[in-house]
Amino acid sequence: MVALREAWEETALNPFEVTLLGDLPMERARSGMTVKPVVGLIPPDVKLIAQPTEIDRIFYAPLKKLMESQPIPYEVRLAHQSVYFPSLRVENEIVWGLTARILISLFQYGLNYQKNWPFLLNSPNFHSQIKNKK
Image (cartoon, rainbow, N blue to C red; front, side, top):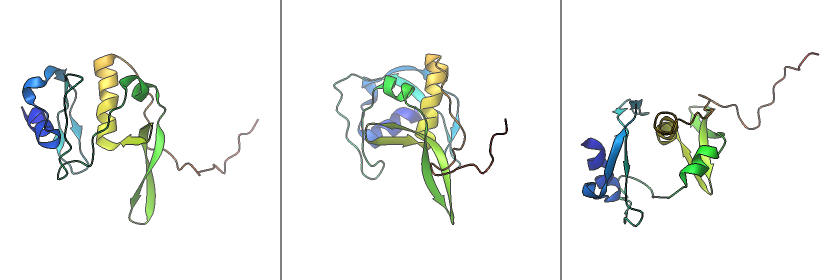
């Protein structure tokens, strides 16, 4: 299975230590590649090692904190403009892009938890020039 091979290449996760639970709907990566997320459980004491050619680092975040955190804007510079994507912040880590979309899918399909997830967010400094009329 591709997901287990990728996890092994990126984190040294032994595929035989994973209890597979199911899969999630396909997602498209920024590169255009289609990704099939697979959900599994690993032992709490498993030793993971970030492979520097694959990923920057590994961090742990409680699932409940990710579910309860509100989406915040994450700035991505494209050419000469900024685009703001929704992201999750837990402690000092920011989860955005494909990883965030896979988590939102897990919440919805795996845990039956609906989370407000806008496609794009306005800049944190954006102020509408339109006034509410009463």
